[in-house]
Image (cartoon, rainbow, N blue to C red; front, side, top):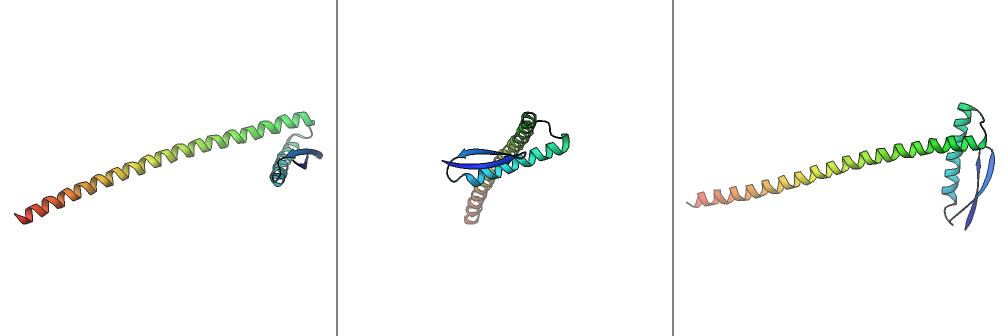
Length: 111
């Protein structure tokens, strides 16, 4: 098990993670610290606990927005898939009609 030191709001925290996840955890720590710094710039130092709650709510809001966007994209993708499926059915039907028309035309030429 690996350990990473992340700095958030000027304080260092030792955090354990799976081996190989150190860089990812460091990036997450920097992201959280950046959000805390944005919040501190907007509202000032409000205490670690209050900042933690506020940043947690901001991150939860971002996550909620992302889930909503993914759901919208998923619905659109399903709609596109249905359109493609319908187009394929129409294409197969037209091919079938074309074959039947060619058969009828061939029969008329022989008559």
